[in-house]
Image 1 (cartoon, rainbow, N blue to C red):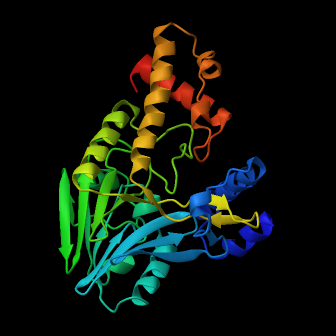
Image 2: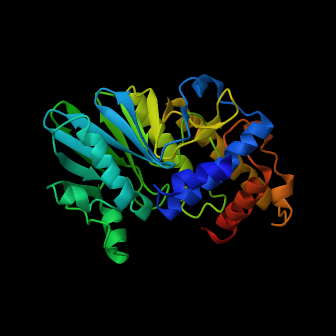
Length: 329
């Protein structure tokens, strides 16, 4: 069934998206075997049968899925704001989805980070006159590693930037290194939803998809989560939406795409996971425990209900974190 599904989807997705989908479908199969069901989201889950899907999050905010990657867009009577075009193929499908909902043009395209899987494909909107915005370090990253399918930002910001377009507002906040060096958290209003392109993956807390933690700024990660939590509390934000789809299983046992949103408490749950793992490795390191022994001595079973929980992945993460305390990065 899974191989047939991948074959059906392959025609509509770039190779890297199909590869991601294969990984997540494999994870979904594991969920079936382990009976790990996300019960509160089950009724709202979508069958894994389409390359593209748009989810109405309310108050003019939409989540657009291309394979397992998600971008977002805000619709107002004065124009549209797009968050992450993803890639050339996805951007074309995204524009088609936008035109189903409004005849207003895309006025702004915003990058959540500089990774090509988020920032590629925007030329179709640039040709329509859209202005591109990103955190200044994102612009520096893109300048150092240019690609023809990535539009350079027209406007950059240091700590924050706000777009007001009709009745829609998008607030962009840079809280320091976390996932890469320019990862930007956004809040869409009036929906009052906090948008994460990565690092938090609703509808439940999860382990990182890449256990090597290649993109994580581990030394500043806890501080990042604490600042985000305080910011969310001040803004009375109750909902988060994630930039990568989580796969669970439906009542029939088949893989399904779970909803893109979850409670703001997920931010705190992710922080607690990282505090526990980082703290456990630091304690073992301070005791002089050898690197080869530490992964086998740390018990993280309290997080076994987190999506993607896997002992082997945790051992890889532990070795990576050991290097943080040994060499400082």
